[in-house]
Amino acid sequence: MKREFEANWASLDSRKIPGWFQNSKFGIFIHWGVYSVPAWRGTNDKLFGSYAEWYYASVYSDYENHDPGFHEQHFGKDFKYRDFVSDFKADLFDAKKWVQLFKYAGAKYVVLTTKHHEGYCLWPTKNPHKKNWRVTDVGPAFDIVGALSEEVKNQGLRMGFYYSIIEWETNWSHRPKSGYFVPEKDRRLYGMDEAKYAQEILLPQLKELVETYQPSLIFSDGGEWDLSEEYTQTKEFLAWLYNHPAVSDEIVVNDRFFKGMPETHGDYYSTEYNDKGGFLDVHPWEESRGIGKSYGFNRAEDISSYHSFEELIKEMVAIITKGGNFLLNVGPTADGRIPVIQEERLTQIGDWMSINEEAIYDTQTGDKIVRNYPATVKNSAVYVFSFAMNDSVTIQLTENHPVKKVSILGIEDPIQFKQKQQQIKIKLPELAIYQLLNAKNIGFVTYVIKLEL
Image 1 (cartoon, rainbow, N blue to C red):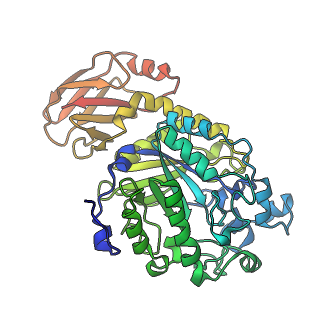
Image 2: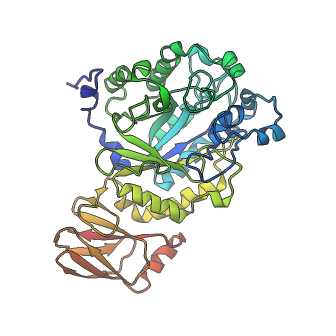
Image 3: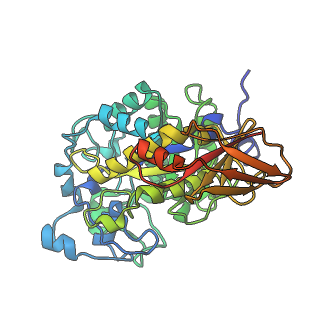
């Protein structure tokens, strides 16, 4: 008989996170919506300062980095944000092609923005408040959430949903000077009584998504800014969720439902653009970021805004060897294409993963065994990530673990090594690393040394 979880933190926090999440290590985030039409926010080096999915707030409100100049020049001062939806057509969207790319990159799960802070829904929600602001009324005219979920599951990956806990057209916030992210006229036209929002939109929609599509993950966002635990009824929702027979064995949730929840409750803690540095193995966690400086597609970005393949691999290694998952975002265009440079990066990651995936999936942190290199551990094997193309490598172990065999993933040549207590000295075969890197034409980034104990 399955355990029944109760609506209190002692019960909810005692739930063991389903094992698939921490074993997966790598997922794909997708930010796609009406904001993909203007697809613009001036870039800068400020943390979170280049998010194009914040177009509504960054153009129409007094929020920081307020810059209406681009909007007025290209669309006109009086052009309403909601009018962009007519050009959100998704006419080149190909769910099968998307998922094939994600799978080749090595991702084990996909997380789609079902509703961002502007409130537009990518599924045909039955919620009456979403009439003319849902995908089958205005915009693409088909169920994006359903189409992608079906294809993700068909290709053997797990599906997750990002859902914004707040809506700019309704909810107050301390962050903008005025208290609201969008103009009063938009709130009067499209918002609702904030006191009724949680009961009439937030909770019904979360339950609707679960019951309609049976996701494996819910990524909450925005609630941690200002909303209270009581207002969001998070304990009651999680008890319902954890006990739901369709998802109870699979579902994981993050920590952004209400103010005070981050790093306190949730199956996993969520960070972005390395804003908190991670949590090692203290608690399951996940770091997300875009390939560039934005989650949503940003036409203001040029090549200097994008991480190179080498930088992405190094970031992935840093996160995974510290016990986290890496959720890498793509921002499709309004017509449904994944920008070529983002597609290239995912393909390059897939080439690297095809050689080194053994050191990624189903692993644990190796910091208790290896002292001077990032490392992972699986069964009796230790995987050491080296970023230096040297003829020899010296690995310092934390204890005197006898090493039986040393190899390099992707190289068949035998590896010579000498062990003196906690020190392992490895002599690399001549030109072996160059041969490995040229095999996939991926350029130098890192190679993995496998120690069998």
